[in-house]
Amino acid sequence: MMIMNNNSLSNGVISQQLEPYRQSDSISERNRKAPDDLVISIYNWALHRHYVRHQYQMSEAIIQTEMIRSDGRNEYASYLKGMLLKKEGKVQESLHYFQKSYHVNSIKLATVRQIAKSLFLLGNHTQAIIVYSEAFQNSNPSEWRIYYNIGECYMALDYNDDAEKNLIKSIDLTRHVTPYLTLARLYVHNNEIKKAIKIYQMAVSFCSDRKEAVVKLGLLYLQTHNILKAFQQFGSMISQVLLPSNAMFAMAYIIQIHREYDIAISKFKASGPSFSESSYLWNDIGVCFTGKHKFLAATSCLKRANYLNPTALLASCNLGKVLIITNQFSSAAIYLCAAVAASTRNFIPFLLLSLALKALDDLEGAEKTICKANLLAPQDPAVLLNYAIVLEAKGEYKHAITILNQLNDISTVTTIDSQVMGPARFHNVGDFIKKI
Image (cartoon, rainbow, N blue to C red):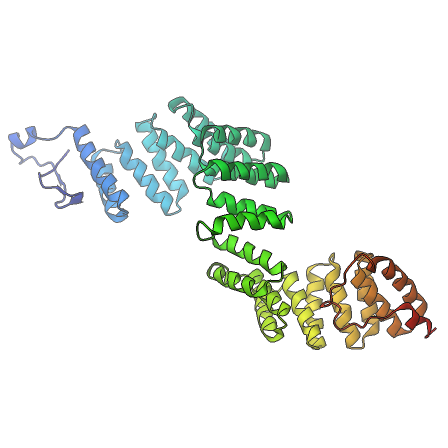
């Protein structure tokens, strides 16, 4: 046993070390020893005090002493030891101490949850479900977190129907935003976009902490090309609180595609600290500078984007486009070859590469690449126009007329991007007939 002097604790700080019981202690001192449960209570108060103050080293010292003194019978000390180990990322070791705490007090719900959470983190999802189910025996039936945690386990096991049922039960019992977000994420994973949007809308309507739900809903609208609703979501939020970086980035993108380049650049800069090493950020800023015809700044930004992600299709394509516009055809061909390698199923890099190769007088290479682009997008007017131009340069006028006839049928309802077609020259069928 161990005894404690009256001034052992002062405002939660140990001022004197605990001393082991000695045979020389007087009988009266031994009679004044606190009972075990009272000593444990005093220790637990000190442990709690230091733990909530984030004084983890002091907590660790008290835990070590208490584990020896109580021979491992202090369930709170074992519990906090598990929590400290979990904070350090030592999940397996923390599980051991949570189990020790459970053996001392098997009805404490917090301990059962931590055991189940540790099993979940260790990938033992089936066992975690069993432990969470056991927690129902010692908890209020309206405890939403248990349904939520079981739903997470079923999601990890790809049992989506069971996950959905438990997450819906959790939502029925709370207005906390977490189960709403998780259920919507499950629907997005299953490509059930309408259901996901409905859950996000419920979270926005019912949950007090709805900021993340607003952002997620706006991003989902943007993903499904519902630009107006996405802008409305972000706009409703920006008047109340500062937008998170990902929402600011998305809003800047919406402004960019509406060609308000100066405003978009300012929004991109506002999201910069979180995305400063993002290829997407520098690509989009480069696109804005391209729209403003500031090609030197655009080239700098797009090269930065390409440096951060050399295999990114958008950065390579946009950089190749700017280099074509500025007549740097050899450099454009290099970046566009990388874009072609990054995506063999996208016609745009093939189209741009054919423009660069034609400008370099490599007509054979230009025809091969534009033919590939035509196979991938046979109705695209930009592809058809450039295909005809390449054929005209090779002297294949009859084939060029056939391509232009297809283009004439499409061009009446489709606008051709002048930036993509900048290096090309528009021709008509009559120009080719004169050369036949």
